[in-house]
Length: 107
Image (cartoon, rainbow, N blue to C red; front, side, top):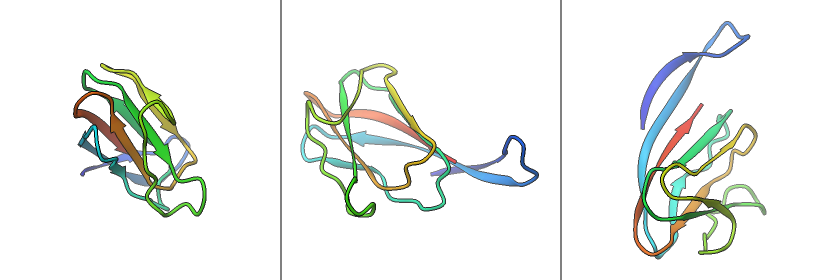
């Protein structure tokens, strides 16, 4: 992941911003972002031409969730996105039809 320092609004300290591209396969489920207890915000953007479904860990917060087509958070093709400013657990995804690329940005 690329790291940049950004000024956090209202704060006097800089925080690390990380971004990366991840190829999400149609099967099996792909880990898009591991758990990160220092994460303040995460945004995932679907840059590909296929729909992606995301799965979050809602049980213990650390086990890798298994994504399934037509279940979970849907990211439409060519720009569908999801952002959270509270979730620090792992995120997995699965592409519909064939592999597609997502961009992940974390602060």
